Image (cartoon, rainbow, N blue to C red; front, top):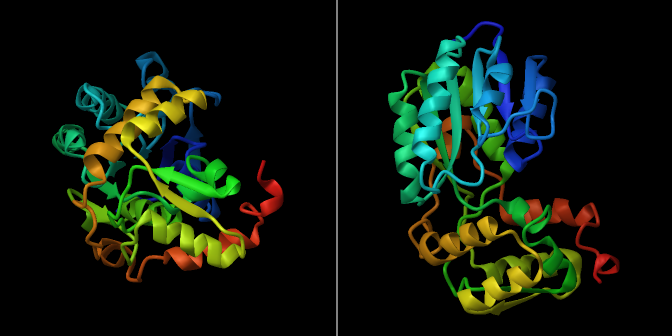
Length: 279
């Protein structure tokens, strides 16, 4: 177990990176949380930015952009881990996507690097509905996606962050690959029903084709690389392969993961889904 570790958190403004940094800081630890907009800056496409952020760090939480499933990510992860070890980093916990077979090479590269590594494969986040990706559509009252009736055990980003912090401290997680899910699998239609219930405002789910989704994302100005990732997720990952909830959050934390309804009730109290916010 590390003694008084100094942490590096990548993706300082992303859903899990921000939460991991906040949890570590609240515990009184030395935390360097970085992104492309911080000083020092970190950019996966600019290896010259890696040295400054890795200097004087003992453990790292890794989130990769745009996604570990993209070709070449395994080579980048291997290079980053090698440099991290040269700087004296001992522990690395990395976020991955559950069911993303294209990400397995990058996960394998990390495990082979020589670092004390843990991989956290996560289902889709609750926070996609209240922080960014699906929020504008929820606020407008209609979520149209090519999701059909495929259930997904959505998971709370706070649970992921808590698991990541535990894995950075506890030696029993070294070498492990976990799959993090929520307690129940629900369809997107059931998600919108829950949001409708807790807000007392109708939110409708409309099934559409993948091409219709892509056309709409393009019209909304979504970058090509993000559109490509979303196509990949809806065409290959959201096919039922991840529908079975796992017990890994409980394995790591000793408690059950947060439920979607509890999350939705708390999010509704912030007013993020209020009808007044809909254009």
